[in-house]
Amino acid sequence: MPEETTGLKLVRTAKRREDRIGIITMDTPPLNVFTREMKDELRKAFEEMDRDPGIAAIILTGSGERAFNVGSDIKELKTHLTIGKVKERARHENDLNNYIQNLAKPTIAAINGYALGGGLEIALACDMRVCAKDSKLGTPEIKLAVFPGGGGTERLPALIGYSKTLELILTGKMIGADEAMQLGLVNRVATDSNALDEAMELARSFTSCSLAAIKMIKKVVRRGSELSFDKANELSMVDFEDAFATQDAAEGINAFLEKRIPLFVDA
Image (tube, rainbow, N blue to C red; front, top):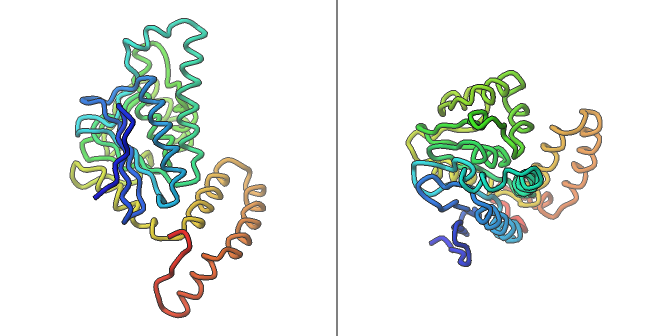
Protein backbone atom coordinates (compact mmCIF):
# COMPACT_ATOMS: atom_id res chain seq x y z
CA MET A 1 0.00 0.00 0.00
CA PRO A 2 1.29 3.50 -0.81
CA GLU A 3 2.19 5.68 2.15
CA GLU A 4 -0.05 8.75 2.12
CA THR A 5 0.99 12.15 3.45
CA THR A 6 -1.47 14.34 5.34
CA GLY A 7 -1.58 18.07 5.99
CA LEU A 8 -2.20 19.27 2.43
CA LYS A 9 -5.62 20.24 1.06
CA LEU A 10 -5.12 20.77 -2.67
CA VAL A 11 -2.34 18.28 -3.29
CA ARG A 12 -2.14 14.56 -2.49
CA THR A 13 1.11 12.65 -2.10
CA ALA A 14 1.86 8.94 -2.02
CA LYS A 15 5.12 7.04 -1.55
CA ARG A 16 5.43 3.63 -3.15
CA ARG A 17 8.32 2.30 -1.11
CA GLU A 18 8.71 -0.94 -3.02
CA ASP A 19 9.34 1.03 -6.23
CA ARG A 20 11.12 4.00 -4.59
CA ILE A 21 8.69 6.33 -6.36
CA GLY A 22 6.91 9.37 -4.96
CA ILE A 23 3.64 10.53 -6.54
CA ILE A 24 2.33 14.09 -6.22
CA THR A 25 -1.24 14.66 -7.39
CA MET A 26 -2.80 18.08 -8.01
CA ASP A 27 -6.27 17.57 -6.59
CA THR A 28 -8.74 20.33 -7.46
CA PRO A 29 -11.05 18.56 -9.93
CA PRO A 30 -12.39 18.72 -12.51
CA LEU A 31 -9.58 20.76 -14.14
CA ASN A 32 -6.99 21.06 -11.33
CA VAL A 33 -6.76 24.82 -11.83
CA PHE A 34 -3.74 26.57 -10.29
CA THR A 35 -4.13 28.83 -7.28
CA ARG A 36 -1.39 30.37 -5.19
CA GLU A 37 -2.27 28.01 -2.34
CA MET A 38 -1.88 24.97 -4.61
CA LYS A 39 1.54 26.14 -5.76
CA ASP A 40 2.65 26.56 -2.14
CA GLU A 41 1.46 23.04 -1.35
CA LEU A 42 3.23 21.67 -4.42
CA ARG A 43 6.48 23.21 -3.22
CA LYS A 44 6.06 21.54 0.18
CA ALA A 45 5.26 18.19 -1.44
CA PHE A 46 8.31 18.27 -3.71
CA GLU A 47 10.53 19.32 -0.80
CA GLU A 48 9.30 16.35 1.23
CA MET A 49 9.95 13.91 -1.61
CA ASP A 50 13.40 15.36 -2.20
CA ARG A 51 14.35 14.93 1.48
CA ASP A 52 13.21 11.30 1.61
CA PRO A 53 16.21 8.98 0.99
CA GLY A 54 13.82 6.17 0.08
CA ILE A 55 12.48 8.03 -2.98
CA ALA A 56 14.49 7.88 -6.22
CA ALA A 57 11.99 9.43 -8.67
CA ILE A 58 9.05 11.80 -8.38
CA ILE A 59 5.93 11.73 -10.56
CA LEU A 60 3.60 14.74 -10.86
CA THR A 61 0.05 14.18 -12.08
CA GLY A 62 -3.49 15.55 -11.84
CA SER A 63 -6.57 13.94 -10.33
CA GLY A 64 -9.17 12.49 -12.68
CA GLU A 65 -8.95 11.86 -16.40
CA ARG A 66 -10.17 15.23 -17.66
CA ALA A 67 -7.12 17.37 -16.94
CA PHE A 68 -3.55 17.35 -15.69
CA ASN A 69 -3.78 21.09 -15.05
CA VAL A 70 -5.25 23.90 -17.15
CA GLY A 71 -3.27 26.76 -15.66
CA SER A 72 -4.30 29.76 -13.61
CA ASP A 73 -7.68 30.55 -12.16
CA ILE A 74 -8.66 33.49 -14.38
CA LYS A 75 -10.83 35.00 -11.66
CA GLU A 76 -7.88 34.97 -9.27
CA LEU A 77 -5.66 36.29 -12.05
CA LYS A 78 -7.90 39.31 -12.49
CA THR A 79 -6.99 40.49 -8.98
CA HIS A 80 -3.30 40.60 -9.98
CA LEU A 81 -3.55 42.98 -12.94
CA THR A 82 -1.44 45.75 -11.45
CA ILE A 83 2.18 45.86 -12.58
CA GLY A 84 3.76 45.02 -9.23
CA LYS A 85 1.36 42.16 -8.54
CA VAL A 86 1.81 40.62 -11.98
CA LYS A 87 5.59 40.42 -11.57
CA GLU A 88 5.30 39.03 -8.04
CA ARG A 89 2.86 36.37 -9.24
CA ALA A 90 5.18 35.42 -12.10
CA ARG A 91 8.11 35.23 -9.70
CA HIS A 92 6.14 32.91 -7.40
CA GLU A 93 5.31 30.57 -10.29
CA ASN A 94 8.83 30.61 -11.70
CA ASP A 95 10.34 29.92 -8.29
CA LEU A 96 8.26 26.72 -8.11
CA ASN A 97 9.05 25.60 -11.66
CA ASN A 98 12.75 26.37 -11.31
CA TYR A 99 12.85 24.46 -8.02
CA ILE A 100 11.32 21.40 -9.69
CA GLN A 101 13.74 21.63 -12.62
CA ASN A 102 16.74 21.85 -10.30
CA LEU A 103 15.80 18.94 -8.03
CA ALA A 104 18.54 16.33 -7.74
CA LYS A 105 16.05 13.49 -8.31
CA PRO A 106 14.45 12.82 -11.72
CA THR A 107 10.89 14.05 -12.17
CA ILE A 108 8.20 12.80 -14.55
CA ALA A 109 4.95 14.57 -15.47
CA ALA A 110 2.11 12.10 -16.05
CA ILE A 111 -0.27 14.11 -18.23
CA ASN A 112 -3.88 13.02 -18.29
CA GLY A 113 -6.28 15.10 -20.38
CA TYR A 114 -5.59 18.82 -20.77
CA ALA A 115 -2.23 20.44 -19.93
CA LEU A 116 -2.65 24.10 -20.78
CA GLY A 117 -0.90 27.35 -19.93
CA GLY A 118 0.75 27.15 -16.54
CA GLY A 119 -0.22 23.49 -16.40
CA LEU A 120 1.96 22.75 -19.41
CA GLU A 121 4.72 24.94 -18.00
CA ILE A 122 5.00 22.93 -14.78
CA ALA A 123 5.12 19.76 -16.90
CA LEU A 124 7.97 21.33 -18.89
CA ALA A 125 9.83 21.91 -15.62
CA CYS A 126 9.85 18.14 -15.08
CA ASP A 127 12.66 16.10 -16.62
CA MET A 128 10.38 13.79 -18.59
CA ARG A 129 6.77 13.79 -19.72
CA VAL A 130 4.35 10.95 -20.37
CA CYS A 131 0.85 11.62 -21.67
CA ALA A 132 -2.37 9.71 -22.22
CA LYS A 133 -3.37 9.11 -25.84
CA ASP A 134 -6.27 11.58 -25.56
CA SER A 135 -4.21 14.38 -23.96
CA LYS A 136 -4.26 17.92 -25.30
CA LEU A 137 -1.34 20.29 -24.72
CA GLY A 138 -1.15 23.99 -25.44
CA THR A 139 -0.31 27.57 -24.52
CA PRO A 140 -3.54 29.57 -25.01
CA GLU A 141 -2.33 32.74 -23.25
CA ILE A 142 -2.38 34.80 -26.47
CA LYS A 143 -6.18 34.72 -26.27
CA LEU A 144 -5.80 36.87 -23.13
CA ALA A 145 -3.29 39.12 -24.95
CA VAL A 146 -0.38 37.78 -22.86
CA PHE A 147 2.13 34.92 -23.15
CA PRO A 148 3.38 32.00 -21.01
CA GLY A 149 5.05 33.53 -17.96
CA GLY A 150 6.22 30.46 -16.06
CA GLY A 151 9.30 29.59 -18.08
CA GLY A 152 7.50 28.21 -21.13
CA THR A 153 9.14 30.69 -23.50
CA GLU A 154 12.53 29.36 -22.39
CA ARG A 155 11.83 25.64 -21.93
CA LEU A 156 9.75 25.02 -25.05
CA PRO A 157 12.44 26.14 -27.54
CA ALA A 158 14.96 23.89 -25.80
CA LEU A 159 12.68 20.93 -26.49
CA ILE A 160 11.04 21.63 -29.85
CA GLY A 161 12.98 24.53 -31.39
CA TYR A 162 12.32 28.22 -31.99
CA SER A 163 10.01 28.03 -35.00
CA LYS A 164 7.58 25.44 -33.62
CA THR A 165 7.53 27.17 -30.24
CA LEU A 166 6.60 30.46 -31.88
CA GLU A 167 3.83 28.75 -33.83
CA LEU A 168 2.31 27.12 -30.75
CA ILE A 169 2.43 30.29 -28.65
CA LEU A 170 1.22 32.64 -31.42
CA THR A 171 -1.69 30.43 -32.47
CA GLY A 172 -2.59 29.23 -28.99
CA LYS A 173 -3.64 25.93 -30.57
CA MET A 174 -3.76 22.64 -28.72
CA ILE A 175 -1.85 19.63 -29.98
CA GLY A 176 -2.59 15.97 -29.38
CA ALA A 177 -0.42 13.25 -27.88
CA ASP A 178 0.94 11.94 -31.19
CA GLU A 179 2.07 15.36 -32.38
CA ALA A 180 3.59 16.10 -28.97
CA MET A 181 5.55 12.86 -29.27
CA GLN A 182 6.72 13.68 -32.80
CA LEU A 183 7.90 17.11 -31.67
CA GLY A 184 9.85 15.68 -28.74
CA LEU A 185 7.62 17.43 -26.22
CA VAL A 186 6.79 14.14 -24.47
CA ASN A 187 8.84 10.99 -23.96
CA ARG A 188 6.05 8.43 -24.15
CA VAL A 189 2.36 8.14 -25.00
CA ALA A 190 0.36 5.65 -22.96
CA THR A 191 -1.37 3.02 -25.07
CA ASP A 192 -4.52 3.61 -23.05
CA SER A 193 -5.75 6.64 -21.11
CA ASN A 194 -3.62 5.91 -18.02
CA ALA A 195 -0.58 8.17 -18.10
CA LEU A 196 0.29 7.42 -14.48
CA ASP A 197 0.80 3.70 -15.14
CA GLU A 198 3.09 4.53 -18.07
CA ALA A 199 5.03 7.02 -15.94
CA MET A 200 5.38 4.40 -13.20
CA GLU A 201 6.77 1.94 -15.72
CA LEU A 202 9.29 4.52 -16.92
CA ALA A 203 10.36 5.35 -13.37
CA ARG A 204 10.69 1.70 -12.38
CA SER A 205 13.14 1.19 -15.25
CA PHE A 206 15.80 3.11 -13.29
CA THR A 207 14.74 3.46 -9.62
CA SER A 208 16.43 0.19 -8.62
CA CYS A 209 19.77 1.69 -9.65
CA SER A 210 22.12 3.63 -7.39
CA LEU A 211 20.51 6.87 -6.22
CA ALA A 212 23.94 8.51 -6.20
CA ALA A 213 24.39 7.58 -9.86
CA ILE A 214 20.86 8.72 -10.75
CA LYS A 215 21.49 12.15 -9.23
CA MET A 216 24.88 12.50 -10.90
CA ILE A 217 23.52 11.52 -14.32
CA LYS A 218 20.77 14.13 -14.07
CA LYS A 219 23.32 16.76 -13.06
CA VAL A 220 25.76 16.13 -15.91
CA VAL A 221 23.07 15.81 -18.61
CA ARG A 222 21.38 19.05 -17.54
CA ARG A 223 24.71 20.82 -17.37
CA GLY A 224 25.49 19.58 -20.88
CA SER A 225 22.37 21.34 -22.16
CA GLU A 226 23.27 24.61 -20.44
CA LEU A 227 27.03 25.08 -20.91
CA SER A 228 29.33 25.02 -23.91
CA PHE A 229 30.41 21.54 -24.97
CA ASP A 230 34.03 22.04 -23.93
CA LYS A 231 33.15 23.39 -20.48
CA ALA A 232 30.50 20.76 -19.79
CA ASN A 233 32.75 17.97 -21.05
CA GLU A 234 35.63 19.08 -18.84
CA LEU A 235 33.40 19.12 -15.75
CA SER A 236 31.88 15.76 -16.67
CA MET A 237 35.32 14.12 -16.64
CA VAL A 238 35.75 15.28 -13.04
CA ASP A 239 32.34 13.88 -12.11
CA PHE A 240 33.11 10.65 -13.98
CA GLU A 241 36.14 10.14 -11.76
CA ASP A 242 34.06 10.95 -8.67
CA ALA A 243 31.45 8.40 -9.73
CA PHE A 244 34.05 5.63 -9.83
CA ALA A 245 35.15 6.57 -6.30
CA THR A 246 31.73 5.79 -4.80
CA GLN A 247 30.89 2.67 -2.85
CA ASP A 248 28.03 2.00 -5.26
CA ALA A 249 30.37 1.94 -8.26
CA ALA A 250 32.59 -0.63 -6.56
CA GLU A 251 29.53 -2.71 -5.74
CA GLY A 252 28.20 -2.45 -9.29
CA ILE A 253 31.49 -3.64 -10.79
CA ASN A 254 31.86 -6.50 -8.30
CA ALA A 255 28.26 -7.61 -8.82
CA PHE A 256 28.75 -7.65 -12.60
CA LEU A 257 31.90 -9.76 -12.34
CA GLU A 258 30.29 -12.09 -9.80
CA LYS A 259 27.10 -12.38 -11.88
CA ARG A 260 24.79 -11.27 -9.09
CA ILE A 261 22.32 -8.46 -8.39
CA PRO A 262 24.10 -5.40 -6.94
CA LEU A 263 23.20 -4.23 -3.45
CA PHE A 264 23.64 -0.48 -3.69
CA VAL A 265 23.95 1.59 -0.52
CA ASP A 266 21.20 3.96 -1.66
CA ALA A 267 18.92 1.26 -3.06
